[in-house]
Amino acid sequence: MKYEPVIGLEVHAQLQTKTKIFCGCETKFGDEANTRTCPVCIGMPGVLPVLNRTAVEYTIKTGLATHGSINPSSRFARKNYFYPDLPKGYQISQFELPLCEKGYVEIVVDGEVKRIKLTRIHLEEDAGKNLHQSGGGASLVDLNRAGTPLMEIVSEPDIRSSEEASEYLKKLRSILRYIGVSDADMEKGNFRCDANVSLRPAGSKEYGTRAEIKNVNSFKFVQRAIDYEIKRQAQILEGGGRVVQETRLFDSEKGVTFSMRSKEEAHDYRYFPEPDLVPVAIPLERVEEIRKTIPELPDAKRERFARQYGLPEHDADMLTQTRALADYFEEAAKLSGQPKAASNWMMGELARLLNADGKDIEVCAITPAMIAGMLKLIDGGVISTKIAKTVFEEMYRSGKDAGAVVKEQGLVQVSDSGVIEQIIGDVMKANPGQVADYRAGKDKLLGFFVGQVMKASKGKANPDMVNELLKKMLSE
Amino acid sequence: MKITKQEVEHVARLARLEFPEQEQERLTDQLSKILTFMETLNGLDTTGVAPTSHVLDIRNVMRDDEPVACLTQEAALANAPDKAAGHYRVPKIIE
Image (cartoon, rainbow over all chains, first blue to last red; front, side):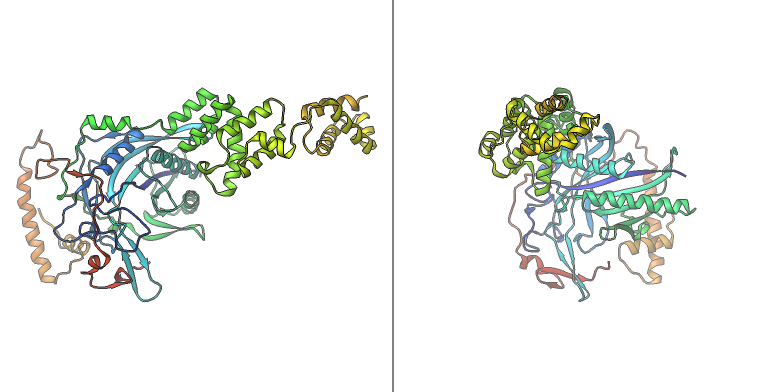
């Protein structure tokens, strides 16, 4: 039987506020253990939490940026469980009436736009950090992180493959960064993802039993964990077995998921309204003010890039992944008047060089003006596209513009027909056999001659002219 | 409303509470009485009454995102029954 994966993702994104959600402790990390705490975030008796206005507004901003509706009245709830990193014995979270509900995020899969619906976005506090000492029979707890504001973003089970899951996460991260509410850095643990995965017979409307994969900490691992889970569940179902509802963890070294604990009792959280916090009811005017602070978002930018610059969906999607990349492209497109060529160079050579160095566009030595300058040299026939690649690499390394690189390295394209004819003559003289074969009808040898001539000219001969002159001289 | 002894045991376990057998029976009886008493409230007609989120009729109590001083590590750990290397020390968390 063919099975269809049904996937829903829960993302925890750390908000980049200056202070914690319920107290004025700074949310700074890498500090010495237990130096960023106060009686509120370490759960001393008799203290009262006071809500951070910026954390609420960032969550509302995220809700608006993902087309959600903001609840006119929202409240907090206690989620009760015991764990050493949770000093109060409960986490202040939201249950009924979250800040935002019913939004969506658009992703591009195989050139098609697909909408992933969001169930809700709520605000909650993070827990501390446990350190497990090897041996010694004890664990250590650092509460610096306890009380850091987290936004939980819950998707509907609209995702159908690990690729879609990865695209969704990338888009979400991109939105959070565009609107400046979270740096959404997965490696730093500021953007964590739980995946609910189930299978159902293709075409069926009912959902199968799901497993929840917890805390996977990179985009690559999310994809691999989901792929493994799909395979695992398919094997169980094909063998006539039953998938158990449980929480699983991903072992990135072995590439497998494994059962963590039975979920039944662990999930009896006995939520109840938080008596220490009053309801939040942000006035509509304030919501509208927040809406005005949202810049053009990746989806709108992607559509505009496709429309205004005639870029394919895929290119438009790639170029709008970060604001810096999108701004860079627009500048290069404007200065060169050649958006398609600028996009091709950015997505090809530039992406390749940056990837190899693990660098971002923000620190790139090539400016948009330098791309425009190089495109003008190609357009004017000064350099060939092939030479341009060499020029581009040198620009990337030295930070010099195309004109300077071409001059320094003598890379000007040879478009003098006399010079090219002479090179062709030499190549023909050196390869009499191939000349005879070509003349006897082996047309395919033209490629060989082009290659030889380009090589002899150190890649500088104008390729169009080489082609034309070769055909002429070989048939004489 | 009746609550079973099993339910009382379950809730006690979730709350990390332990009771002797006799106490459990007494609590089961008392909790059942409390729940029965609460049922009286269900007799009220609450059509058109907004659910109460909080006993105080105020909303939007918030503070600005401005840092204030934290406790020193020494002060933070002063009440900890056990500590090591600037951390709270707890029984090993099983993995």
